[in-house]
Length: 328
Ligand code: CP
Ligand code: NVA
Image 1 (tube, helix red, strand yellow):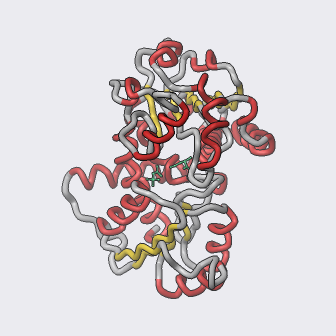
Image 2 (image 1 turned 90 degrees about the vertical axis):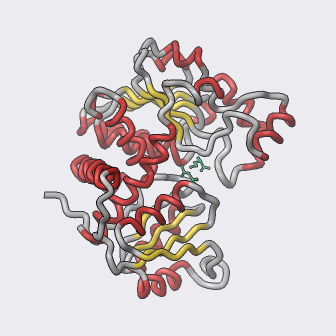
């Protein structure tokens, strides 16, 4: 039997297939309970802190609602002393005295690791430059709900920046669950060799596969097409180069057709630049004379797109992570 009480949640590398499936199944149960209006109490009397170095809509809101739904109290901290006037280690030891769980979103994976080593309470990774494990649970729950196949039969194609946090995190999750995972990106943005090697070993055990290619024809027979922004938080000086590299890798209706699968679904972790309705996308579109980036508005708004189911699932899956690691 799976018991995750007291565990940190820093990367899916640290979890077995059974443990990941357990969190997905728990998410499904919690989602159903919420739909039926049943109030949870598995985090009653607990205190949770949300530490943010980078901006967020979904992750911050999902953690907060999930905690409150189960009876916990939440502190949102985006202006702490950590890393400026106080070391990560000292911050961890202080927060561990007040709180029963710590969420961290920021730049370095080492920061979330150092927090976990010193806090004495579960630490959850809410995104770093290298990984985004809570997002993967939401993505896979959305696949379970919208693709009529077990996860280990799914062909999951990630298109775009192959070496960002999402590219890494999806590859790790897919390898664990035994999916046929494909990264399609320009060679310059292929995922790091050592991660690919490590995940191919994991895929060998789970019955999955990892393919890395710069050929967009590899979308054929995809069950899922996933993309992410071309420029991640902290890389805002790289728009010009990324647009040049990634233009051929835009998710548009031609690419959807190339899958030859009328039931293919489109996913995106969000936020997304699918139109000019944001200050940044409007500026970038004008500056570089383009009208669309990682996904066209047509695909984003199409019947293939399950991005808002996916966004909702952030809340249910994050709730499962907190319940599993605090309540057990
Ligand atoms: N997908 C995601 O992590 O969104 P936020 O950056 O809004 O939290
Ligand atoms: N790769 C994106 C993911 C946002 C959820 C970023 O890091 O900005």
